[in-house]
Image: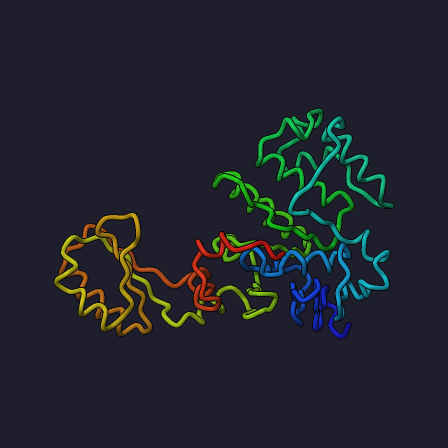
Length: 314
C-alpha cells in the first residue's frame, strides 16, 4: 500500500451470481480513523461488498486489501484485527452476555474483559442475562460490542440500526461516535439518509451494484442541483403558486394540509421565493439546505418509499 493512512483498498471489485451482477466493478479506499458509509437501497450491493471485504464471500474478480493484506490470500492475518457486526446475528441461547463475550474472547490471542465491554454500552447490569431477555436496542448494542471483543482496528457494521425505534437508534449513533473516538476505523452500511449524514465522514452511494457518487458528506450535499429549500404552511398559496413554480420546484407535502415545500437553485431565487411567501403571511416558514436524502434521490431517481420497497439484491 502506497499510503499508510489507507486501511482498505478495493479495486475493480465484481461479484456475479449467474447473470446477476450484485457488484459491478467498484473501487474505493477507506482512510484510517474515518467512518466510511456505503449508502443505498435494499439490494444495491452494499452488504455483498462488505461481506467480501470481511472475507465472508469470495469475489468474482477484483482486488481487496485490508491493512495491507490481500483478503483472497491473507485472511488469517486480517481476522484478528477486524470486528464484524452482521446484519442478523444469532447467539447461544443458554449463555449469558458475559459468557458469550468470554467465549468470543477465547478465540483471539488478545481480547478485552467482558465486563469492561458491557459497561461501555450500559449493559453491565445485564451481564447474567440471556440475549433473548434484551430489548431490541439492547440487543443491537450487545451485537456491536461483541464485534469489539478483540479490540479491532477496523469495525464493520451492517445496517446497525435497522428496526430500532428513534431513541434506540440515537443511542446506537452515540455508541458509534464513541467507537470512532477510540481511533478505530468504521465501515457501515445503511439506507437511513439522516444516519449517513450524521455519522459518516465520507459516503459512497451505491445503485445497482455500482458506486454512483463518493465524497465527504457535506460535499455530496453541495452537489444538489437545488441546494435551498423552503417549507411553509398557508391556505392562500393559489395566489402566488404560478409565480413560485417559475423560480423553483413547488410541491405539496403529502398527508399535511396546506403544507408546501419549494426547492431552489440559487440564493437569488431563494430571496424571490421568500418575498412571495411572506405575502401569504404563512403560519409556519422554515428555510433549510438540501440534505443527503435530496442528493440520493437526484442521483438514483428513487424516493425513500421506492428505496425501502425495492427487491432484495444484497
